[in-house]
Length: 242
Image 1: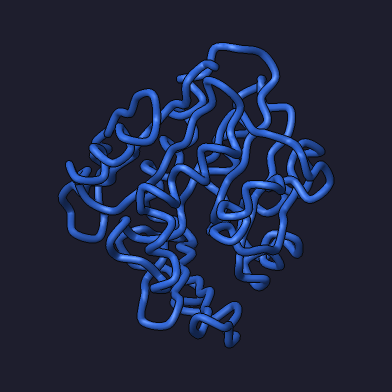
Image 2: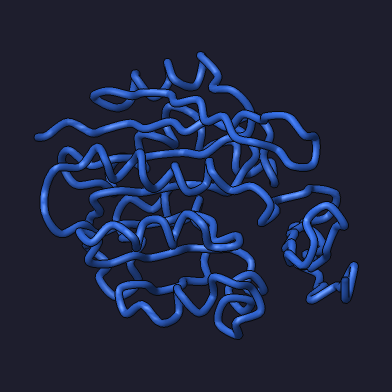
């Protein structure tokens, strides 16, 4: 069976202690399971990541035109970013993460998808505060092209719009915060958000107030820990075509 539990990284951050661990469970044999925690928050596991992948698939599926410039907020274990790169139309991908340690895991190959992301010339990992960048409507998410707008912005950082990792994030989910985010998108561009659990009507309604249209998808996936199914939400909103 090999190592049953191994702490791969542990470090303090401004918003809590960050931990990456790898373990095995008898019911999964020789399969390595990667888990990320921030303080008492369990951020993600490699056991199930369907909703994170669908975040990219559903959002990019709303775009009809050619080459796409995409932003991902929240790197995690890399599933959303990798799913975005699987779309051949993606010309550039900027992945923004506040936690330097998470970026280093991918750069050093400590997590399985790191090599995929680091070897793709379209992908760049940026150590920055996504929410601060969203609020700055005069500057792009792309540090190399400060005036650049994007076709799609995909966000997977907080658990839900009301269950956030840090209280300063709550402003982003207001009408004002979402309107600022929309100004980073090209006409007809897409903003998509992953959230834990079923979609919440109040947030879908708020997206409708800011964007030209919005859809809330329910993602149902097998949960091998509980033996049942779990739910995730993917909200997809589009700007006006101009």
